[in-house]
Length: 442
Image (cartoon, rainbow, N blue to C red; front, side, top):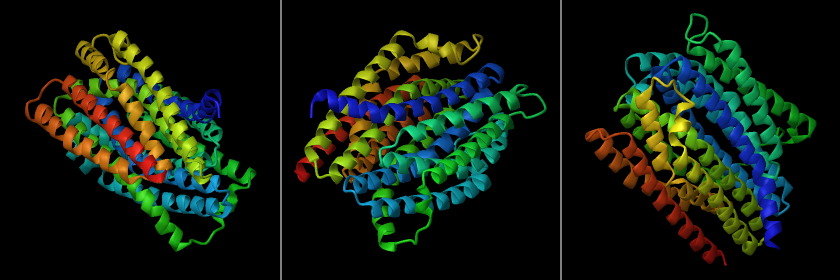
């Protein structure tokens, strides 16, 4: 196969995933801009802290956990043309997803305030966070359902439908946000407005995807008896994905609490910088998701050489894109910062810009890590990414964060130097892990 054809396949499959991530990030950025301009750093801190918790739950259990396992197993079954296994794994994925959504919703609703307290939320930030998380926890039920169905569709090579669903969810979120939050911080909705807008949009997304399943006869996956041996087979890969993301996200949550100890302005600067960086980060994650599907299908077909070729060209593509963002963050850090907060918040603007300036270093390493991690999962090896993520998160990031941020209260810019080191080591190890796995298969 020619290089041009390889790139065409990568682009065709990954562009809708990239578009999906951009749409979600746009909606989150819109929310943060509105809050930053009208609510100030305490509202930014409260909502971003709660969203950090929700995003970590999604990442650990769903988007980088259960959903990656669903996509990997279905892609390999689809590559083998094993229709029955595609149906079986689809049903198992949805079944486990719904159980998880209910359990997580109840736990977060009941124990959200305790988790926020552990994350060093205090005073007004704590009070606002409790009100927000009571509603936002309910979004897990429709949200997880949508994510699991999207993972099934990606496994069979359909990345366009999840993109369309993201447009519906984000358009409705912004619409309801403007309706409910037009008088934000006045009596009618207060901080509950953004949470209600998110909940309504997720419910609409779930209704649309159910309609799509019925129209395209995907409802077949719900008329199944559970095959226990396939559940155990699925859990072997699924739990490794969950543990990998858990190692990263739990350490990130703990570090978020450490950053909050620096004060609401430093925390707001870090969260705004993360939101801006997420545009580049999500592009890398998108390519990682796409390569999981491609490699899974090629392995199912028994074509390891093409799986290897697709992975390396995806990495090249991701690295080029990430370097473009590195240049943008390096050249315009303070201009990007001013979009999110009022010009009076001089300290927040300064530290946000400095964080982005340092963050330019880590972008290509994030891309390399995401692509090779996704390729390993496509090969059916979720254990190697788990080991690597555990090492870089808990033996590099956590000790350094504790020493410099929690103990010595260094500026928030130190956080970004630490994460740049973490991603550099992570990306290099993921590359060698993939190379080792391919050699073993060959």
